[in-house]
Image (cartoon, rainbow, N blue to C red; front, side, top):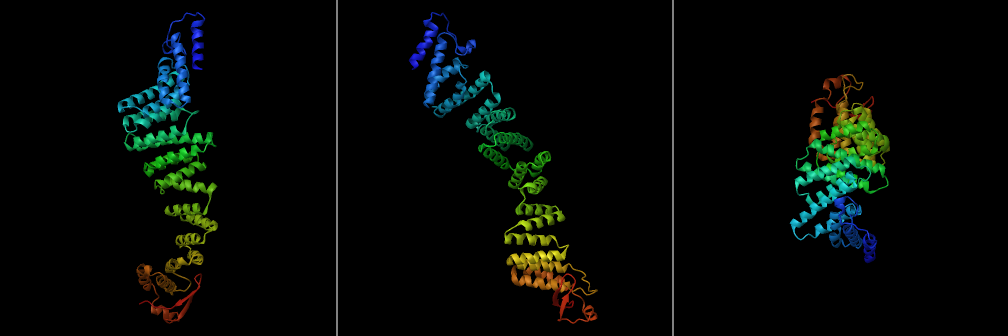
Length: 441
């Protein structure tokens, strides 16, 4: 078949008696060149393509190189196939020096493709990918690759690939680790890369590889342990522009949690905003704890209650109730009810529950009993119950008991109220529990 092709070409230029002088395409700017050089171009173009089709890439190299150096505009495939051929040649280079020379050739192939066929945004991205692939151990090369990759990320909108995006992030990480990029510069690079992958996901939502690339970018970013305050500044600006973007809010939560930045304001904002579209008992509980840590107790109580309302696991609900009780001691009656509910759901809370009730009673100063305050008796009763169930509480509980002894009514007050030590006494108002009369010692 090749013989027929070459014969036809020869006939076209010679058999018809046309007089032409040989000249290479790279010299005269033509596609194939002229005269014998055009025959040589077409012949080697065919030979290299046949070898590529048969996956004989190393064999294709010598024919491909002739076309590349003599008539580079003969076919765009020359530059599509070129990197694949060069990978094989680089892999099988006889010496380290020759390998580096072939890598240089690969870089020039990308430059030539831009020169003759354009697509700079896409091609510099591919160039950056391969430069980092072969020379990631050289900081200068990493910096150069980063420049190419970030140019691609910024300018290429039609043919952006997951590989270019992920490699751009990898180059930024390497430069950040080597202090060539400071934290602010690294965050700026991440922002541009992250925006590019988001655009890719939005444009090609059915491509399942794009979310994987996004995950890889986030993972690399998280791995660099950026200070929380800088993270807060970056994401606060984003969330202010897109307050209801669920994907962004989830990203913020993911990044902050992995970077241990859960005290960041933006983390709180993101979690609370997610409640509008992704409400769950777990998320309500999380936001409740965040609000509590910011002394936003009213808001925290509200979120705890919502978490409890929709939580289905009894043990977990009991845990939420115990925490809500500790937060609600300003409303002692309600706090005690939460404890009792928690104990009913999970008996393992009994000792700690009694401790909380003891504390609640210890804060009661007047329950419509005049000078007689019987609440300390009940506080001590519950403290004693708590340590009898869980001996590990004894040390701390005994300190509370010693303090409460000093809060008992004096013997004179007991006498003037017509009571005697040792007799039973029912505490009224909201408490409504029976205890034993005891005087201060």
